[in-house]
Structures are given as structure tokens and as C-alpha cells.
Length: 159
Image 1 (cartoon, helix red, strand yellow):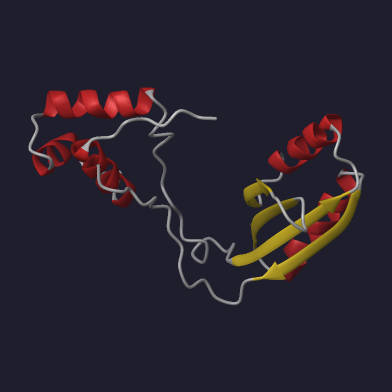
Image 2 (image 1 turned 90 degrees about the vertical axis):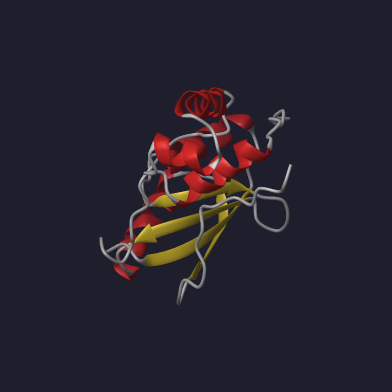
């Protein structure tokens, strides 16, 4: 189990601000939390070193780049060996269309969110998936009609 990092009020404020806009300057961040730049920078470095901040990225608009067809794919397998698991993970990691990938409890063993251009592109993805990995017993897909909420902002409870 991963050990939780102790976050104080200032850490939480900084993290909330960065989740909304990672382009904020060090000066803007420091001013917002009533610190000078050096202690603010040290806090950010500590949060990165402790793994609280994984990476800083740009979030793209899927519609603007032509990959706004969202599919949720649920997978069942008959093979639960470690070797199969490793092979399956390796195959899925090599598929850039897979945006999220989870091992599940319940009726299905795995679930993924896939972003592609359209149904034809999804069909191509689906065929690659089922032909690349043996042992899949059921692959069920559902398609999003409309995105009603999407967020990358994790809720930070008060200290």
C-alpha cells in the first residue's frame, strides 16, 4: 500500500491551483499562498520528490484534434496467470488509443477508456486488441454519446 503524504493547508492550496492551471508562475503561486518564492519552490520540489505531483502536462481538446469518439471497453479473460497478465498489460500499453486502463473487481476483469476518430477507427482498434492477446473470453464496448463532465482535478480535503 502506498503511504499517504501529509499535506498542510498551503500544500493543498498550491496543488489545487496547479490542478486548475499548471502555467501559473512561481511568483503567482507564492503570492496566492502568502509565501516568498524560495519556500514556495521548496514546497513544490518536495511535492514532486514525494510523488504527489506526478507530471505537468497539457490537456488537449479531443474534438479539436479529431479523436472525440469515446469507447469504454470491458474485458473478461479465462487466463489469470501472471504471465498472461504481463503480456496483456504490455499489449495495451502499446495502444495509444487507450487513455485509461483498470483491473476491476466484479463481472469484468479489465476496463479501458479508448479515444479514436470514429467507429471505423474503433473497429480497427478492437480487431488489434482481440487478435493480439489470446485468452479474452468477452470484450464488451459501450460508446459515449456526449461528455457531460470531464475533470483531472482531484478533490483535496481540508487539512
